[in-house]
Image (cartoon, rainbow, N blue to C red; front, side, top):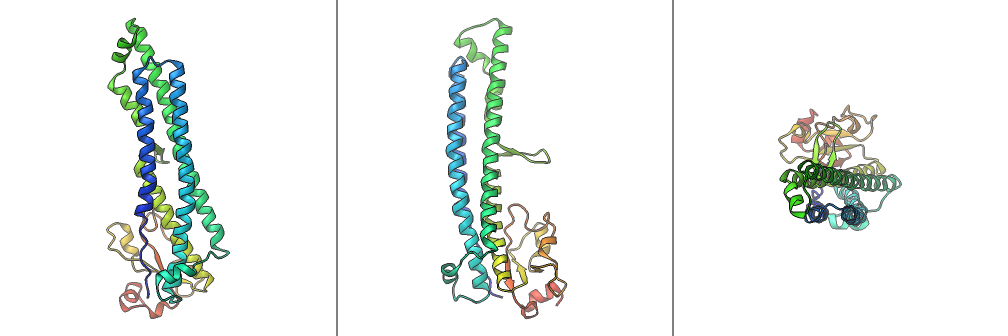
Length: 286
């Protein structure tokens, strides 16, 4: 079995998350300007428009990033299959000849579109939460002024409590609320999302390239996982449901155990499971 170099997309992921962190800082700076004003309607509208502009720029960056990085990770997935099957002497040579097949072209486009949509959902959620928090803060300040019978900037500043700052900052830093109600902060969610998508593009493109070359099996990578993934390391899987040998079909693997979000595992394609190294054959009972 000839394993290709394990991909590392840390730089690409960090490049994107830095843009999200920068946008978050800029949004929070915009929100902080409200504490220097009388929460007038014109100022609130100006802040909301500035935040929209920040998020529009972020959306454009994220869209371009997704197309470039997902395409590259998929191409590396194709190259990993070419290299693993011995069709190129080096991985660099494999990269030079890697092309997207009729299976991989729509796959890559689908993952790009999906990633762009997920990133857009993040900025839309930040926009919605921020706008709601600004209006709630405005209402709270007005109520405080009315109940105390006070007017003027000095009195207003006294009414702007630490709790209001906390509410506005928290709203800007909310990326998404998952189906189970978990609230994700911006940076860890974006990191998880794009790391998962790049690894998915690599893995799926590798599998499709193997199928195009009539290869029906693969071996799940091993790196000493300590979570449920450890039970699948070194296991042989079938790329098609009807592949001979009785190996588990990759489409039936439990996603809470292997190939879950943030999972680092990949698959090395193999033509003949019976010719694998002894330690892998032992793991698989062959």
